[in-house]
Image (tube, rainbow, N blue to C red; front, side, top):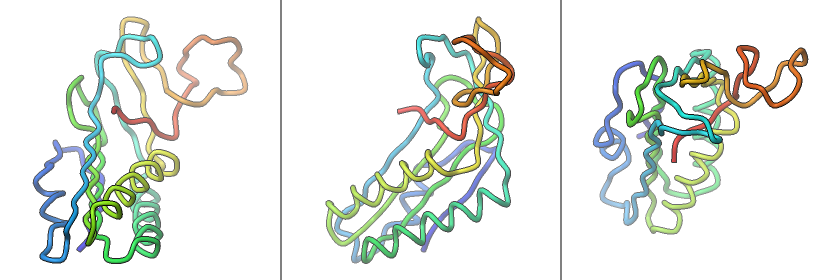
Length: 158
């Protein structure tokens, strides 16, 4: 069983764990990424995640299939929030089970890292300095200033 989803509703750690547990799973690894109150020296009051849902669903499936091919006996769960999240809210839950702990840790780490690098989800942080997209710079921008033309392929708490 594999659980892969994008949701506006709050995420459940128990749902992710239930999706990967089974009698042959000797190890289960879990990652929970939460919205933190600071990023790169800037205070954060809340953030918004936006996604291209059909593309994100395909990419989540591709990532899970890759890891399943690399780690025998693995089961995976990855659920990512979209919409507006307050500081402290859970932005992503990833879980992996495997026959042994080393494989479960490896699979969970790969799942988180690949999602962060490849998933078409963008983050806009809000704080006292105003809102800004995190992670990319529009060619029209110069200097180190944050502005509305910035965006990010992906960043998570943790």
